[in-house]
Amino acid sequence: MSVGLGINIVKSIKSFVMPTFGKFINKAFSDKYLLFTNVGISITLSGLGDVLEQHYEMATDQIEKWDHKRTMNMSLSGTSVGVVCHYWYKYLDKIMPGYTIKMVLKKIVVDQFIGSPICISTFFVTIGWLEGSSKQELMQEMKHKAWKLYVAEWIIWPPAQFINFYLLPTKFRVLFDNTVSLGYDVYTSHVKHDIQIDKSSKRES
Image (cartoon, rainbow, N blue to C red; front, side):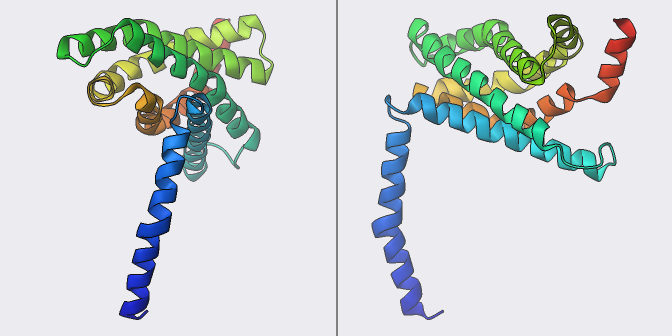
């Protein structure tokens, strides 16, 4: 590649690609489209988290092949969770406005004690509905698995949410949440489909 061609490519990126990308971001995170953007992000990363977890399970001989339906269900769970997170963050910022350290710490506490259980419950209810689980099966699964996710949330989210609540405007909350939670989504998929927990649950039922 000649120097002149390289310079022309850089100029094209600066003059066309960057402004176009900037307009897209501004539109996607505007009030008009923010809900759709947040739900889209949640769907995409929830599915990606399951894909990563399943490939790990295949590599370690826990499963034989990729379960496409499982990934689809995990992705679709991002719809309800994305909606809940979208409105939860807007509500939280409305009742607790401001970026002081004291206010941020209050938000973190409320988010952990109220927001996290709501999101975890939403996830299990959505997956249970998609899988056709009975009410008894759903309650049994939540009893044995939801607490593991909640414990993990106390490790991951307080420091992450400090950054989220202290530095970012409301419209970027779900984006940051989902970016951080990609690793957590892998763990969520692991807990949801943990065969050992399922066996233990069946013995007790």
